[in-house]
Length: 207
Image 1 (spheres, one colour):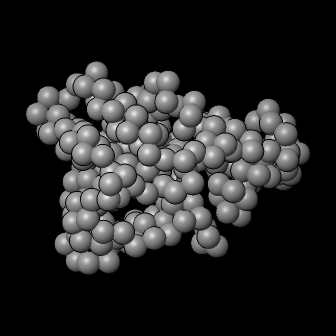
Image 2: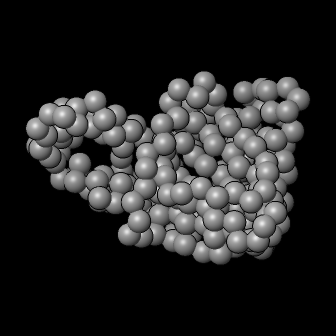
């Protein structure tokens, strides 16, 4: 994917889960530290996740692992969706797998989309509207991830990253962009190798 993405700051949202439903979603390429789940309820969307771009229809789930560039483009006006953005604090033991692996294909549809996933996404929506409850959120997110992991081929990352590194990099550059900076300087400030940092620039920020 040649298009550049922006880093979406979500650390001050004050919520471990943000969930909403609507239609006709259009959102440019971006990335953040959170897990994002996007369920196409009806209609059609073109969804980009990392280097994969696909037009998908009804009952398709896109699973966006943390710090993965993604974008949405509604292809049929009025196409419905449910979107859940889950902070690292909500993910429990699954966080390690989410930061050390990437799915060979980030989409689940047809027989691969277990009915529990649709039920849990709808349950998250209903719970957020009636009585927000962290334990119920965690249980439903774990159910979704358990069903996703059982149907997805996960590929190990060559260099597993901490979930905060990309955000720390962007924040450091935002605060120090007027200073003379080099790859060595920034790598030293963030406590990583310059090769790892270069990898973050190319694979996460596409620049």
